[in-house]
Length: 127
Image (tube, rainbow, N blue to C red):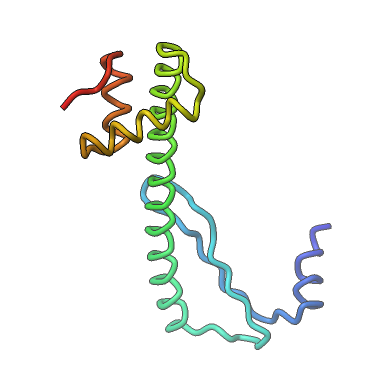
């Protein structure tokens, strides 16, 4: 099984590879793998360019991961606020979410801020 990679590369016509790890100071994020059908296709200049591209890709990936984490946390908090409204006022989930949206609109505040206040204070958000 150890020789399978080179055999597959040969079947696909891969003659050169350049592989770079994508990472930040905190995380290993994956790899950037470049393939060529030409032998000895990558030069030192190509390596410098690939390192620069890999660095940019790693930063973009890390930012995306951070944004996903923030989004999930916000979604969870909004879900908690919906649950409080459902229990307190005997509403279904859609109606409770509509209440939060309406409050957000009428008070000209972000939905997350309305939900956060409701969860923190366990009472209807106010200005």
